[in-house]
Image 1 (tube, rainbow, N blue to C red):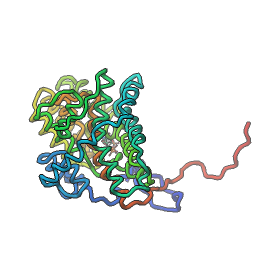
Image 2: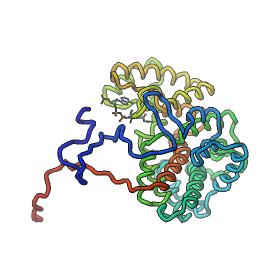
Image 3: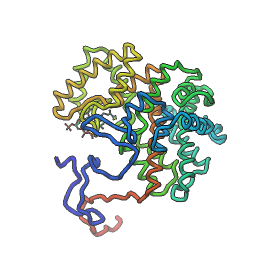
Image 4: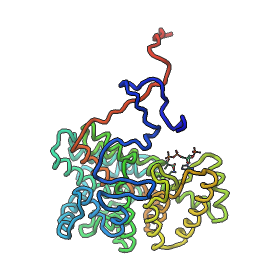
Length: 396
Ligand SMILES: CC(C)(COP(=O)(O)OP(=O)(O)OC[C@H]1O[C@@H](n2cnc3c(N)ncnc32)[C@H](O)[C@@H]1OP(=O)(O)O)[C@@H](O)C(=O)NCCC(=O)NCCS
């Protein structure tokens, strides 16, 4: 492996260990989990024992949420009871009804994910979340349920407030995805659009030990409260290399403008060391199955943007194959998710927050799993600076 991809070797780590992990922890197994996994070479990922793509294609978001929390898909009766349990948890706590307008309008520019992490931190503080170390499993589960149910309300309310509109109270009769669109727009959505968004939301609930999930587990391993872990995970997700790409992928389509511009535009970007947003993945070295699912969803919705994206995809893959041979760069989840969300009327600034809403379910399932069998996550680093101890110079 090239030197740039590994930690420097030489001195031992601070705990005397000689075990060097590759840079970026690529391929390092850091935990066991029963929640799911990603098989990069096969282009397959699963939620517990089921193909995640099949779950997205055939079941509701609430079913997938139940599967991650309970280990099995619900029966019809269990599904109905689950919906009943979730519905009242979506309402904003009174303290947040007062605080949200100030958070939504605090900055010069509304940055939804920043607003969400601020609001969620205040929410879990106001709800008196306690260190996970001090809670019984059912108490931590109750906090997890409340958080998963509340995040969509928080993020859609923040968006509406930033646009000068009043938040929309959750619709008691609508399931998660339709209610999400309802709270965003104030109108009951077309069932076809709600189902397209639901497939996207299910497909993004969990995805192995990605950066934000790992962050949530690291914070939980300290015994901190669930709110701290989810807020930290949102921070990790906000980075463009993780969850911040779908709006950038659409920005790229806009910048390219026409199919004939695609090849020179992409060549120029890669020559200047830029990443083509929506392409490449740490684990997948073949088609990202989420991308294939969302490409089908986008195709069902149809439209010019889908046709254009399809052409650009082919050109990007060809150019990257030539300019970055052997890296196996294909579309990731972000490329078509932007197209799907745009077709369903979700504003571009809300793409990553929509991702954060469903991923909160995955984070919380991991937090519960981490807390149930916890050990502090505390690795080491290899010091590569000037050899210590050097004499401390006198102040001049
Ligand atoms: C997702 C991503 C961060 C994975 O990164 P990674 O596993 O660390 O891959 P590396 O950074 O080691 O890249 C390996 C090689 O492929 C190239 N590469 C990876 N993704 C690329 C992209 N989207 N466009 C152009 N080149 C890319 C790198 O430049 C590197 O080339 P090199 O060997 O000449 O240095 C990366 O593919 C990326 O930045 N994609 C664009 C952002 C994106 O879509 N994010 C959403 C992820 S779901």
